[in-house]
Length: 455
Image (cartoon, rainbow, N blue to C red; front, top):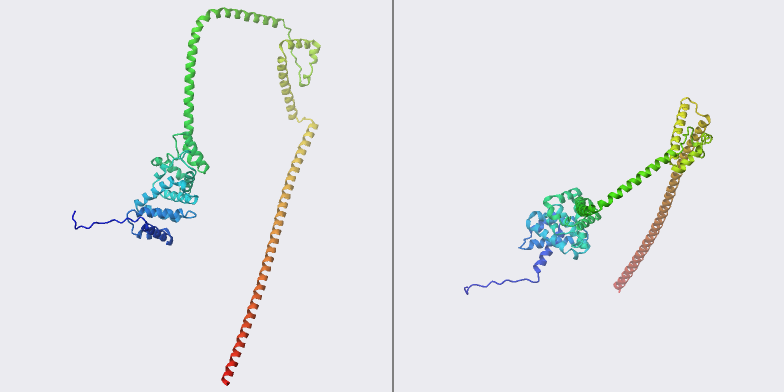
């Protein structure tokens, strides 16, 4: 090194006065502009040094977060800067990622404003949707403030884009990497958590694909369980067959003798039943049977003595046969009576008293229906009249209240006018007294001046 060269010194400003002045300048330009276009035009005129473009984005975000409610002005301003340069876009993406990581430190107003700003930038495609890949929606990795942030972001996106367009974005294969953790499919517990989360915030339509995935996973699990159970049952059956084959050879000799004894017993029982049926007395069929004879037997049976026989058969073989016969006779008698009634009806030979009863019943029914209709009409009219009376009473009460309010207002107005008049009178009197005093003072001065002249 040459001794003649001067050494250059670098001064480091740890007080950050230049940064504070730069941020003040940005804040004043934003607040003094009428719309976002004017603010962007003024901010672009500022000579930005290296590293100040990130500070400009931070200042815009801080101004938006400090507002009581979200203002669209800041969203449009950030969108304009994102479309101007790629450096601004990367800066806003970095800010969005950092806000989610530190969202548990924010207050509710700041959290809501930041979520609305990020949703506006995403809906207009000012920043990439890859900022959502760090959000993992499950019970372990999320906090209460993080879930509130996600809720507000997706609700604002649904308002800006619409639910159908948002669902198309989610189904887009090029954007699956950014939504894999928000709509997880790796664990059924996480999928259920995301489905319940979106249904509670009113966006359950976005979880249609997740629901189908859950159903398919359940079906696959059931099929696996069924296959495993069937395999286990087959193995058990094979083992049982092998054991039965081994024992069958030993027990075959014993079973042959037992089978022959059982066959002999069965044949003996069949022969005994046949002899009993042959020796049983034959019953006489009843020709005349009607519903009126259910409590007692027909006269024909009593004369021929078949009643006793039937009782013996019933005691031996049970009452089932008698019940079946009675049912068959009942059906035949009902059919005959129906045919006779139809023939009489065709020939117009129906009994007059039955016709009169039918007419009376129809007349009574019509009268009852008319009475019911009249009662309903009367009730409706009464209800309408009561409603009209209630309305009239309400209107009268309202008029009375208005009149009373008007009277009170008039009285107040009159009192105010009287007080004003009194004030005016007092002021006039005070002015007159002051003028009189001035006149007296003037006259006294004149007299004194004349006396001095004479002297």
